[in-house]
Length: 340
Length: 268
Image (cartoon, rainbow over all chains, first blue to last red; front, side, top):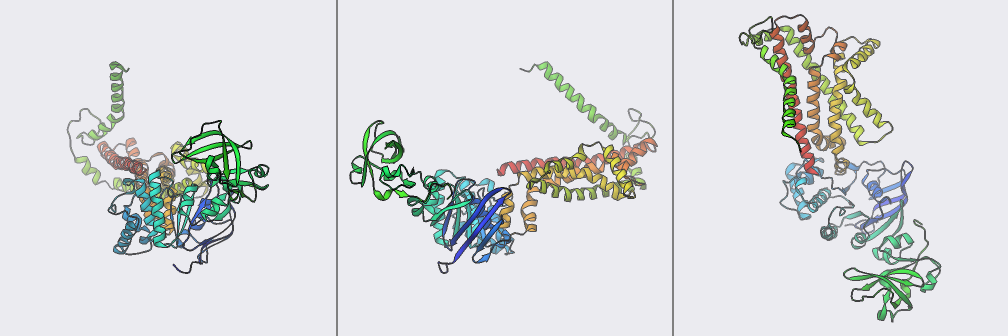
């Protein structure tokens, strides 16, 4: 790793239109070298198109892209020091695991013994050994994922792109692979750019998150920033479900007349509420047991809001309780706008 | 429930159909060995291999065979290149009029040969193109492209577009991507399409009669022999040869595409 201030990927007012569809609409973006950067958004929000613009599968309709201070427009995918882990893995079905991983070296003319040694190193890096001679069809989903990772890493790219790489895995495998990716990121010190629609994944893995909506970046920041200080209603609701209060409602909750986000876990119920700045009576509407917590629907000031109560705090519907939250839990946002 | 009676009837009619279709082929095979050279006397008075020797020594048969093989090889080669390119374009991109282009490509196979033949003949006339091996090849290529295209397009559709992107992403150029990723995945389909195309071209009569000048392909030679019989069993010998040359590629094509289905299904 060189100086931490080197920019790995730079987007300047990048736009990509497909016919009349503005898939990416004026995106400015700066990804630092060595960052684990997540692009988060619902499907069709432009995050995957941004990834494909970095990979070179798409060219911008307008704007400017740099990869390590080198202009990327017009540069073919095979001329970029960037490798991709595809959503469907895109392993070559007719090749063995070893040949798949060695492919990038083979097309660059690395001799067979050399490329096979390096491919084995890459496979041991992702902890997949002894599968060299198998075909992709003979592997499990998690193993294919590791082959795809090894194949992308063997070329020693400057940026590793991951397109929803965990989408096809079941929950347990997902958690394992999340840890694995974080370990690899630390170990290799590479720039990782990661596309996902899963906010939990983005928050837990990334150094910084860009939230996309309708072809634009709505907010960029650390996971804490994004979660605790959402700038718009869209971010507040998409990144962890939040109670979004209208400018009319907010003052009744102790806030100012702005669109305001109040996270469910900030609303405490019963004795726990005593120490809070703001206390109000509330009616319990419904409660859902969720293992560690009880998701509780409350009616405060005629407005229904969600709260997260400890699992032990079972409350029957219709009961009146005291609820409370800290003044700082009320986060005023810039505007309602879905993509302002 | 199915009754035994209708099942038996069904079996008998199926058997009857097969005998009706393949019986004449057996008769041709039998009369390639008969000792009687003038008529189809049944049963043949005796069996001999002499007609194979006679056929071997006939230069007109050799000339026709060479021409047929050459035409079939060139037409198949042309069809492999153009059919694959067309399949790649039509299966991977969407553009206005794509379905119409696809229909126009397949049409020559559905069109009666006589229409194709007349159309090509008048086109060659208009262009002042003299009838030659070249015009025969063009005529055959019209339907050879279709079989290659049909085989290739089905395989292209099953080929994930991200495979090609992955290859570029890993540093391969277009040629390397075609050679190492695309070709291995469509290879058996092309081989199958090519063999079918070869077999179709090798025994084609109708389009050939309209597009050939003085040249005689093997099927045309056989047609001429039927009108002016000269050593009838020699014609049967040539017929057996044509059957062999067309039967084995078609059988091989069948096995290749069957295996291809299996491989593609397994990788899902």
